Image 1 (cartoon, each protein chain N blue to C red):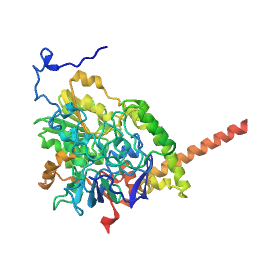
Image 2 (cartoon, each protein chain N blue to C red; image 1 turned 90 degrees about the horizontal axis):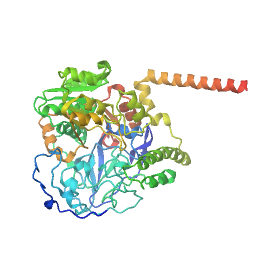
Image 3 (cartoon, rainbow over the protein chains, first blue to last red; image 1 turned 90 degrees about the vertical axis):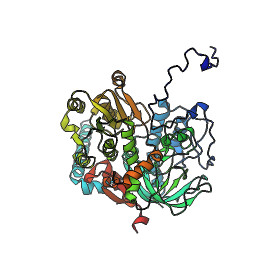
Image 4 (cartoon, rainbow over the protein chains, first blue to last red; image 1 turned 180 degrees about the vertical axis):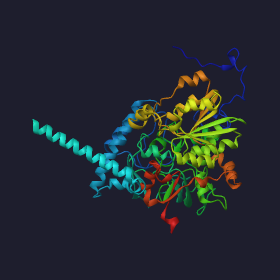
Length: 163
Length: 384
């Protein structure tokens, strides 16, 4: 199919009903229509990439400044790299990133253990705040969990005895 | 330095990290003096935002003292006490030039749909945030603002996000004198949106939530009518009845992805996380607003599809307006409002918690314990 460049001023009726006051973005946007010129502004200095930085395939480059927190690594990093092959419009981008986040949690636990640190999950989850301000519900939750666990263990044992 | 470290859904702790360094000529390093936990941080905390990596430091509502500046920084000097807007904005791109500072195109390589935000996952640029003793601040000449003499630091830290976001929520509503404004969500932003709706001439302001202690606070602070949706039954039906069957002129969604109130949305958005959040508040906002009305969205949702009654948006002829607040654009006006006593943002702060107790602070805020409305983390250097 041919896609010739169209000069709008040659289109019959072009602009006859244009109303600059009809701007639903006011006052949030100080309209200057600069985007009509495309990606052409004078960019700030480019930050040097000291770590691996993934970038959306909906842009041609890495932004002039970027964060350097927690660069991709391990299995989660591999999943993240593959996710960035898909656009932000695709589940192929976001769902692998969610998966990578969960894999990262396991990697974080393993890393802690490898460094001789046993994470205190109770403290990390704010257990002390629960104990101080929501003790009844915390205890109730623990009791219910313990009862359900005991019931499950008892059931599984009886099942094994029967066989 | 001490810094909050994300370890997985609902697990955070304090770790030791290196002090950040200047990585760009327009960077500054600030020594943090205040850092709030935002309601939107709870989306990260609950593991709802894609590309939230273990080890990241959250925190985008920050004040601090400039400790170091890059060679191109001219407006700030070492020792300045600044408030740092949550948006990272270059000031040069076409979007910043149009004052859309929440939509900067030179601060977030990982996603084009959102500008850079401090400590808000790699989906918002991969920057470590300010729930730490120090924070790197890119483009330091653009958004960071020296705290005016005499301003309470607690007021200043609320000007980095809560106040401008609440104000812009009302602004985007296009409120006309006499309008009825319904705000869904009585968190800090919802309460501020209700307060600011009056500044635009609202004739009636209604706030809806399920937590009585927050509703009571909002009713006194905004001040406004406050209703618990658990006792209303159907909040949309209530809104129709209380507006003589018309619907509100303007509805504001100040909840976002973590909404309660609909098992369907809760299962898909909060449980299975297969949509961009539990859009219950937005659903109610769309259905509660009058025909031809305006829905203003400042509640944060994930980047994937979210379930809303879009057919009703069409059939009712609604206008939907939404954005991350452009903090820099709004600051001059809002500083004036605080200095003149029109707005009292620090009154929203209910808990001042040492940074070292960040795990408890998140739990307290997330589970709404101890009547928490707004917690602020205070680093050790400020307390000594």
